[in-house]
Image (tube, rainbow, N blue to C red; front, side, top):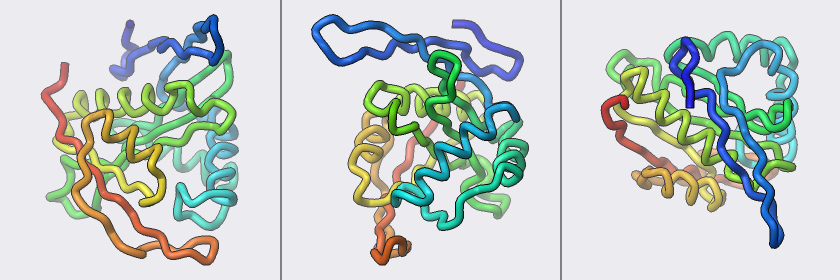
Length: 191
């Protein structure tokens, strides 16, 4: 593995295809750039209009997505998973709360295109975000996950997150009240 100037690993995680003879497809994890805006927007907007994974109700415009990428530079990066030249998923670290005493805590978000789910891309994104959080000196990473998303809760648990609370019926989407599971992982010193 090599690192670019931002400290992000330029890596290829192996993903295995289903079947008796598994093929290996390299996935590259890197910082998001403006050229990724449309692909990220496409993945995110499908979740906005078709799932409860995000509590956003209005799809993002290309300009909105470009502003989002610009805001996710430096200590609060956005990263992408690239499969055969196409963005297969993305993740980000954002400030957990705006008050200064929270500055050493971040929240992660991960979205994987449905055609690429089940191949370890979400795990690769989450592991890279945890590593970057350590490099940037953060002490804790939080995840706020809709309570019925057992896949994401399981992924976070398998990466060292613990359930620290449940916010009951704090969201409403598609005429349903939604709980949010609050998960946390403490960060070790950077490696």
